[in-house]
Length: 236
Image 1: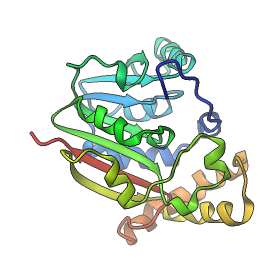
Image 2: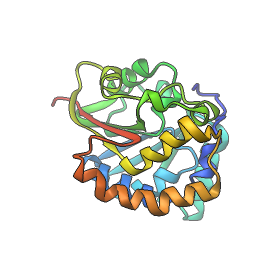
Image 3: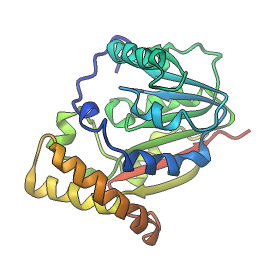
Image 4: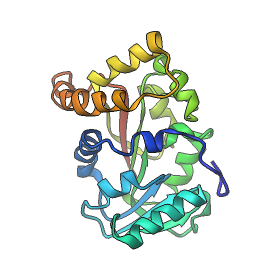
């Protein structure tokens, strides 16, 4: 991903209508989100619309695809997204002095070849006490044709995600989400081998599996799931 990149993944439109998953992610990240927020890889603004309504002092949506960045600006102007600032570019385009209290990578880090370098650059823009939040697909063994089709370089396990963050950050949380949805990922990996899920697949996952996961995940202590959530903080 570069400042002039054009996003090649096809999942943004496919997942644009999910409601239960977005609400679940909002619930999970809300305790860590606040202050000046940097959202890296804002895409079509789906995460912006869900999370930028949580308390914060300032929000910057950063998107490397110029067409997607402009689409977010149009939604902000039309009032269909919260009044956030939008910038075309990547973390490398930030001013060296810019600091944020929260930096978000929601289903983004897996699209970046140099994930270690990316998080090191992000950490340099964290204010003391700031939080770095990453949500990504979990379990390398689940890597499928769908992952390849939408430009995923990898899926993460506990060790690989922890290793991607710079050593000066302190891990505050590491957990898995969507244990029921993991069954669907297993089926796709070993049986269905679909490049992209159908609209019916998405409705089944979002409407049935995610609500079940919100109950079951807690039973399993957030140790199982097809997504992995990590939160680090920068010592004050």
